[in-house]
Image 1 (cartoon, rainbow, N blue to C red):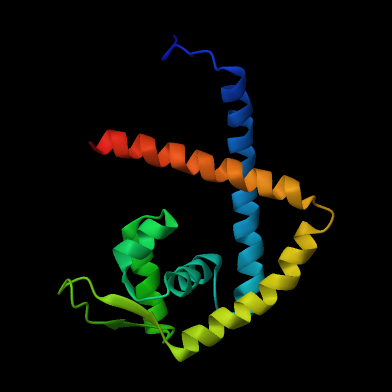
Image 2 (cartoon, rainbow, N blue to C red):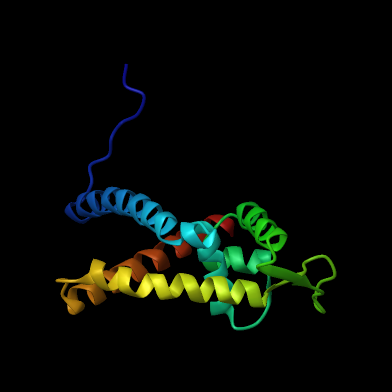
Length: 160
């Protein structure tokens, strides 16, 4: 019994499907490698990523905004932020614009942990990039940004 009728993919759709499957595998490998890299610092890839989002924001933001910037689930980000707060890596400050959505700020201990992670990341990413053509990497980056924009547009249309 056929449960669905498969629609034929265009050649671009077929190529993108293969790329998406490879990106899923690559993402898993990157997360495992990141976990190994920062484990001596008491971090995980997820915690490191959130510390990075806080640093990149340049001003304190509520959890919902951090989640949006990461393209992540707010509840998952909240859970990790709560863990980071419990370890003294982040703190909450009152939000003058929203009483219940506190702002997340990096503590000195959090800044030190993030800086230590980035010190480990530089030689690791340099080894990973060894032998890669910079122009090719920049092309992949542009393609990923374009796909993210298309996904964001689709999501916005579904929410209208």
